Image (cartoon, rainbow, N blue to C red; front, side, top):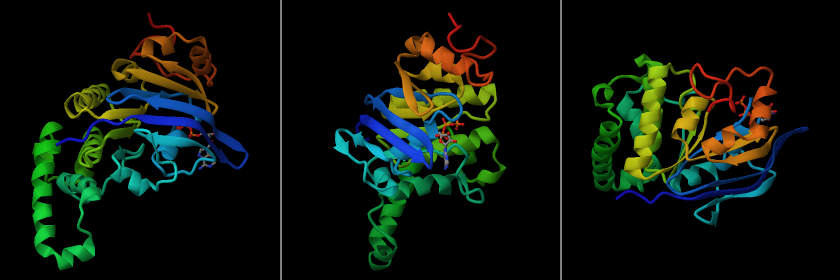
Length: 275
Ligand SMILES: Nc1ncnc2c1ncn2[C@@H]1O[C@H](COP(=O)(O)OP(=O)(O)OP(=O)(O)O)[C@@H](O)[C@H]1O
């Protein structure tokens, strides 16, 4: 049975690198089952927020709550066990390993038998391994249509498929919240559309809450229910895609970011100028 989607509440999050305030008291509320995007110009604090929420950075102030439970002090590894799975901006797969083996690594976060247990309880470990394999194969590989490449080493796959394998590995953790760090960065239009569809399908079929950081505004505006905008470590806007793209502060932030060429939709006007 799939775990229910979770709610995420971030309040007053601050993070400092020396004299740089990467985050300055941001709030972020992610409703269960929603697709929420965190956007902002370069250096706005998106990665800092992502790393603080997933436990890779320790914030200076603030709280991170998962379904109302304060997990601010919970280490990253244990947050994964609570159902918070993430992907990384730069693909973090084992390139020499097959697609299937990479995906299985995600599922291992939930195995109850460790290395020593495996020696003592060989039968249990083996049974768990077999159940795991069947479950992963059935659910994740079929769902994301990766069957034809399951035994292929990741290194020889095109970039778009590697990103999809990363998504599959995060899904194999059976997350309640899926955090995607620039899921379509570096992709061509076709790969981007494929990934956007996959994210929508994941939310629809698995009922997972999705939080993503992304620079591709067309994709963000197409698939998000809620958008939160950061600039210089502060939250400058939050709302529906429509509200956000018509927000004067957001338009100013994007236009002011050294001629930032990002577009709301392919070949269209900068943020704020789309009807
Ligand atoms: N490890 C670090 N050491 C020092 N300063 C950092 C570090 N990481 C981020 N910063 C600074 O913190 C601020 C926020 O950076 P962050 O990477 O979170 O922004 P971002 O919105 O993710 O940017 P991008 O879109 O370019 O990835 C920036 O001023 C950045 O230079």
